[in-house]
Amino acid sequence: MKKLLLVFTALMAVTVLKAQYREPIRKDTAGIQLLKGLEYKVEMQGSFSKGHTPLWLNANKYGLSSLEATNGYLRGAVERPLSVDADRNFGLGYGVDVALPIHYTSKAIIQQAYVEGRWLHGTLSIGAKEEPMELKNNELSSGSQTLGINARPVPQVRLALADYWAIPFTRGWLRLKGHIAYGMLTDQNWQHDFTNRQSRFTDRGLFHSKAGYLKIGNEDVFNPWSLELGLEMVTLFGGTSYIPSSNGNTTVIENGKGVRDFWNAFLPGGAEKVETTYQNVEGDQLGSWVMRLNYDGDVNSFSFYADKFFEDHSSMFQLDYDGYGEGSEWMEKKKQRYLVYDLKDWMLGFEYKYRPDSWVNNFVLEYVYSKYQSGPIYHDHTITIPDHIGGKDNYYNHYIYPGYQHWGQAMGNPLYRSPIYNKDGTIYFKDNRFVAWHLGVGGHPSDYLRWRFLGTWQEGLGTYEQPYTKKHHNVSLMAEACYILHGENVPVWLREVEIKMGAGADFGAILNGNNYGLQLTISKRGLLGK
Image (cartoon, rainbow, N blue to C red; front, side, top):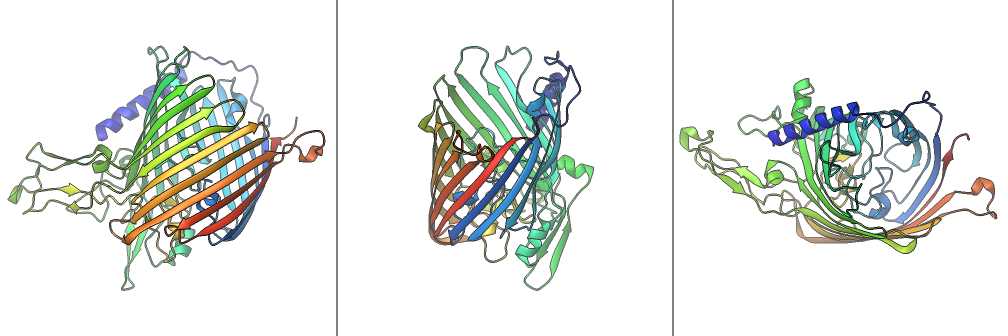
């Protein structure tokens, strides 16, 4: 895995350098106008439910949501997007996005606050910013398993090739994009309140993500087919972890925060400070192999895609070393012997698009399977038993860190039951072994009207550590319509106001019983100034 990541790093570095020193295609004829293209958005939302807020009225909203039966917010944002300087070598963007909520986990939320710059193709952003999913439909998909849109943005420093860039000497047939980022989680006070400091939590945890995507296909010639391949990885590391025990004592672990620890987060290595004989890599490391095969026609397009999730090297490569010696040589690698795991735990999807205005424009169907997790047995080799089996990967959970979550919401796919649903004060994913079918359908019959429907069936087994006594099932539904006020009969100050109404429901045992709800969102956006 280290060699693979070194190759990935080298490709990213070479691409960034070549992208920045290639012959400029833009010309700067005047200084940047910092207020040019400045946009505003004001929004008000209210949710009213029986039970919790239904899943699809709560999930995949970048964490700006609540499970409380009655909740809402007033939101205001100003933003200067990088696209304003699209015809320049250098671009500058910034944004501030603040919400005042009712019955949320915070009394005030700074949802986004960032500044970013672009030089030719490379961008550098600093702060918290909502980043969309790659290779999936952000409106209709159930969500990415690694880099999702379900939790609040993490403040970070992010270096990226945001758009596909043609690699030299490939005549446009190979294109590359990706990013590298480091940041800090902001939910330590929420963790204190949620756990009452009686179960595992971490203060000032650090966050690292990286991704690279290779596209095979040429957009400059008539070739409707393309193939996208990628790797997404995340590491939670650093900070101070607290692990209370039943006898009232608390184990305090000062996780590494030095330069070496940042390197181990980027290129998996090192070990946790509490590990001795058996050592894993440092931090909570996870990721996905992703793939998407596309056909893009003038009117119709369709795609097949896959998202193969992993928590460690056994599920990353479906392979584990199993050739240790015996007796006094029990820790030495003596044989070229490997254990091959079953090729399972996938998200498989299909997407269809119809471009002209129509009542049905988009169709997404996904299948998610996460029950295997390298198998139910975890066994490290010993002085008497040389066999080494690394199963029970326990997706999204970790024995030191509070798992792959931020402010209680899964940072990946929300079908992994987020800790915010827990009633016992534990930050733990209690249903990470499941199979699910997800359907998303949407349309835009005109420029002023659009709609979507989401429906998901799920069968959960709990976790290997805490299995359900019997299978749990859940069905989550949502229907949503959005209309933009327009026309001469509409007062000027109401024109372009967007009114969105959604209705959702959950049926089953996975999300704490049945839930029903309505959600109304009113928003308006436009340019500040002329």
